Image (spheres, rainbow, N blue to C red):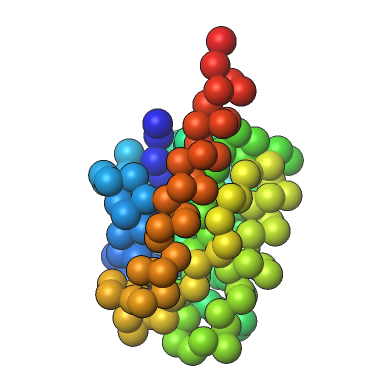
Length: 170
């Protein structure tokens, strides 16, 4: 199983990335195989055929489990993440189990992961078996929301990954 974390935060080493790494570890029991920090790609996202962007896209589209994380910017996910996702082909995430994760400063944005990020992942073909996860950025590492979300999410993600693997097995 290939586990990939995709961070749409424009700052490298962000709380968003740390939260996504933590979620991936909690779901799988181990570190992800690949980490894509879009902040490291920056302007290359606008360069057709850029090898770094192509490598990131290959890791994302080849994942068994993809944790997609973004801070809440202007009540939505970041433009950086949107730019990357827009560069993927239609159906590029078919066969990928994805988990939408968003961090924000206030609970009033609590539905952003489900209302904004989850639909674009599904549109790209991903299977999204869990409800989106929203964490306050001030308590992402020790969040009661994460603690409550994890037990059903572990079962849902494992079932989705297994089902997709069975469909693609020779």
